[in-house]
Image (cartoon, rainbow over all chains, first blue to last red; front, side, top):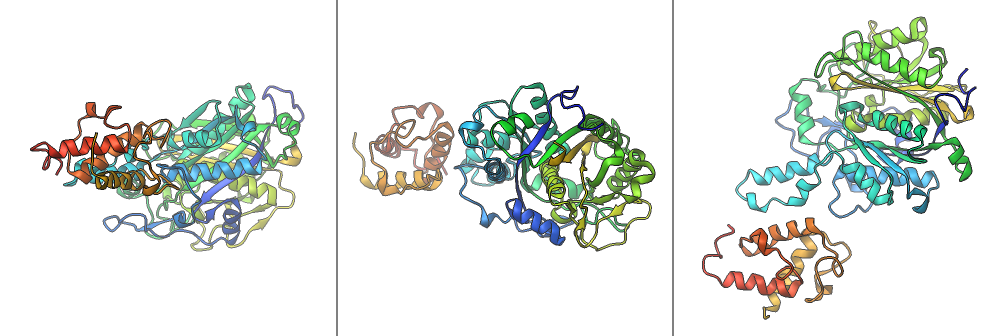
Length: 410
Length: 96
C-alpha cells in the first residue's frame, strides 16, 4: 500500500515545502496559477529578437519589464532561476542560515545562450574587439544553478542537468535521490531557460514549431510553441520539514527515467521509453496506476510527441486511460525546454493543492486517435484528488516522469 | 604619476556604465580607491570588460600582460597608463 511503509526501501518521505515560478504569466506562482486557471494562451508575437527570417514568429515571453532587481552580469536565465528560487525558499520559510547546507539541482538547456549570441553578433561584425567578454562568460549551462547557489548562499552540492526537455524533471529526480540517500537534508530543485536564437532557429529548422499557438492533442496540431521561464521546488524529508515547523505542500512520491534509444529528435512511435519512465515513477512512488487522478502531460503539440505519449499512457493505464483528466501546461505557456519539467511540476503540485486541473484552450478538435480525456476551456474540479503524474519526454528519447501525492498522504 | 582629471572622469563613467556598478555614480568614485578586492570590489570578469571598454573608449590596444596590478590599481593609475599609451606614436589608431 502506498504510504504504508514510511521506513521502507524508498527511504524517507520527501515533501515539497516551497514553490517558485517565473513564466509568461508573470513573476511568481500566483500569476502562474491565475493564468493557468484562466486558460488563455500566453503565446504571442515574439519581441525578444528579430524572428522575421523564421517560419514562425511566436513565443511565450516572460514580461522582462516586471523583473525584480537582478545581480550584476546575470543572464535572463539566471535571473528567472534566482527569482523563482527566492520565491520558493521564502514560501518554505527558509532563512539564509537554514539554506547553508542545501543542495541545488538545476536543469537548463541553453543557460546564457541569449547573451552569448549578443557577444557573437558583435564578434562577427566590424567591431569585433568591442564584444563584451562577460556576455560569453555567462553562457554555460550550469549558470542558472550556480546563480541560485550564489544568491541563496548554499554550500551543498550544485548539480546541473542538461537532458534537453527533460532537464527540469531530471533535476528534481536528482534532488529526490540525493535527499533519500541523505546526501543533503534540503534541496532547491528546478530549471531555467530563456528564449534564444539557437533554440528558436533550431526548432524552426526542424519544422517542429506551429505557425499558430500550439494545440496539444488536437487533430490539427502542427508543432510546439517556444516559451521561457523557471520553476523551483524546495524539497526535504517530512521529518526535516516537521522539525523546523515547515508546512508540507505535497509529497514528491517518486520519479522514473528511461531512454527510447531510438532517434535524435523523434520519440519512439509507441512511446516505450515514456511508458517505462511512467511505470518506474509509479513503482518508485508506491502508487498504483489506478490511483493517478490527473496527468500533466508533456503534450508539446507536435504530431509525433502527442501520439507517442498517448500510446505510452494507454500502455500504463489500460482501459482507464480515457477517463483520466489530462492537461498540457505547454498549451498556455509554450515549451520551456530545460525548465518545462520544473514549471510543470509546480503546476502539478498546484493542481493537487487546489484540487483542480488547469485547462487548455478550447481551440481545435480533440484527436480521436489519441483517445485522452482533455481538460478544455475551464478548470476541472477534482475534490478528491490524491495523486498526479507529470511527464517530460525529451529529444534523444530521454524520458522522465514525476509522481506527486497530496500532503495529507504525508 | 600625473594625468588629466578629464581622463579620470571618462574612466569613472566607463566603470559605472560598462560594468553596471549599481547604486554608484561616477562622481562618488575616488581616484585612488583600489579597483579590485577591497574598494570597488571588481573581479576578474570585470577586468576583461574593463579592457574592452578602455580599448573602445580610447582607441587603444591593451595587451594581456599589461593588465597587471600596477596599471589597473585605481582610476588614477589607469588614467596615467591610458595617457602614456595615447602619447605613444602609433597607438592612436591601433584600436579601431
